[in-house]
Amino acid sequence: MVDSAPPAYTPDLRILALADASLLPPEVQEPFDKWRIWRAREAVVAAVRRRLREGENPMIAFMLERLEAADDEQGIFEGIYALSEVVELHRRQLGLHSGYVILIMAGRINPYGLLEMAPDFDNPPVPAVEAAIELWRLARAAYLNVELLLRRVSGDELLVALEKYYAAKAGRPYSDDTLRLTGDASELPNDPTPRPNTP
Image (cartoon, rainbow, N blue to C red; front, side, top):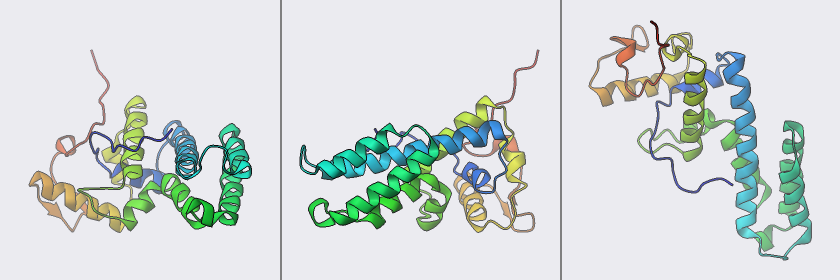
């Protein structure tokens, strides 16, 4: 089930740009893709269940069970779209419509796009924060040099806005010429990229 409470902290959100630009290695990108699809399912199920009273609508209950039982990505997507059609048929009863169900799914599938729609970096959308936390976990496990990969992203206005935000928050200069923060990359705010222990 998806937690309703926001995460306890907000990591460096710039890592979301790497998933959006497909610059992550497969050992990070593939588990992240799977994670966000499963999170989309959890969020959709939670939203519909909150509106459904026990025994109220057997068709919606059946579609929810079918979605929860889906064990692969295709089954999850098919289940979400099928559920959204049933929700649309019963929109008065539930107080939901299919567009809302799809929007919930989209926010979990594309957290960077959600952040772009709501670019309040002091209070980012919860799905974007959760996705960044998961990406940092995967990046640490893979000893990924996130700073180096971020330098490969070009033409991303949201990433530039995030870099300016982190530079201002840390009291560091930002250079428009390089479109990257200046200074030592290891001192960047919220940069949890691990360095392997060497003897």
